[in-house]
Length: 94
Image (tube, rainbow, N blue to C red; front, top):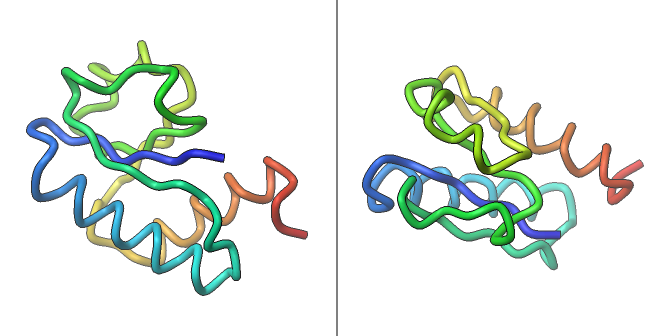
């Protein structure tokens, strides 16, 4: 499974979300999941199974297919809840 964080420039916020996703996956014992970060312009549907984006990018990332919109990109509890739901739906977590 591949997860990705996307932001407008592909630098600060998406990298932070990527690192936070990796932290959460480690807590869940799922360290073999690939996590990357991209800017909106270079993100493409084939690059990940699920994309995590801030609410400000929800409308401009619909072309990516599977998108999880974050109300707050700095809220670890929200991110943990949404990452957990994604890996459970993929059958990777009981």
